[in-house]
Amino acid sequence: MDTDERHWIDRFIRHLETERRLSALTCKHYRRDLVALASWCDSNGVNDWRALDSEHIRSWAASCFRRGLAGRSIQRQLSAARTFFRYLLRERHVQQNPVTAVSAPKGKKRLPGSLDADSMARLLSIPGTGPLVDRDRAMLELLYSSGLRLAELTDLNLGAIDFNDATVHVTGKGNKDRIVPVGRHARGAVKAWLKTRGELAGVNEPALFVSSRGGRLSKRSVQARVTHWAKRQGIDTRVYPHLFRHSFATHLLESSHDLRGVQELLGHANISTTQVYTHLDFQHLAQIYDQTHPRAKSRRGRNE
Image 1 (cartoon, helix red, strand yellow):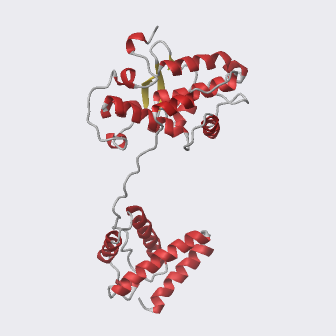
Image 2 (cartoon, rainbow, N blue to C red):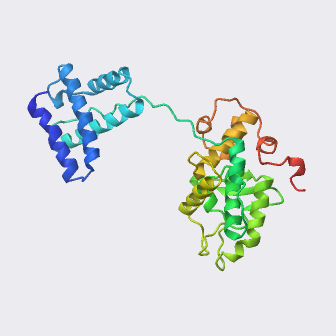
Image 3 (cartoon, one colour):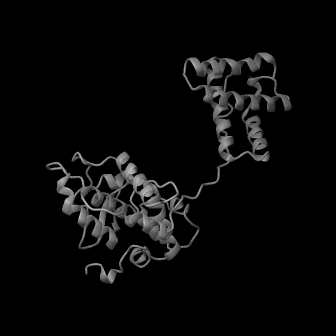
């Protein structure tokens, strides 16, 4: 790659700094990735950005993969090159973007974290009395008992839980409704909270969980309360609301081996989303929760 062609990298970085106002660190990363591409071009007899085609880009990505670069890192490099060529197109230095049709190998999916059943039980055994403690205990129990997403929890209104049927009506992603079982510990915690909720809730407030100011509790507040109780209960790993959902799925799958059933309980549209937790096979759904959830009660005794 001759000097004039390499100068286009400098011009592009100035564009990022002055027009797009990207951070110095981001610009540094762009430069590093583009210099790597230019070096590959030098080694493969490509002397002009206009000479690069999609096959060159695929070869470059393949060489990165052979050197042991992770899929995510290759994706980042391709993204940098794609943005660079958009700039060259704008400046009319090239007539096509050779990176458009090239994708990187997919990186490995990281398995979600989870707490073991004993650690979860310790986390849920929060001490104290009063409306705030009652509220927090009910929230934590419900997150784990029913595998709710954070937004699903904060969106719950009074009446969402059917205590006779031991279920909660949830509106999930894409406004899709589902009915999820609620274990006896969670039902007891929510009932206790409902007795003291009036001390906090504003007049005509429909939210099940409210803040000390009386309105619907925010997602950020739930995250803060989860962090508070995890530290208070001596949990030495990072705990966040979605960890309850991961733990819910993991514990059910470990016991039931029923991937399809857990998919239904989680509200996943595609079973491949659920498969991130395990590679187990399918069975039937109805009795999974009652038979296997660590804090559930058997169906026979639900309404006792």
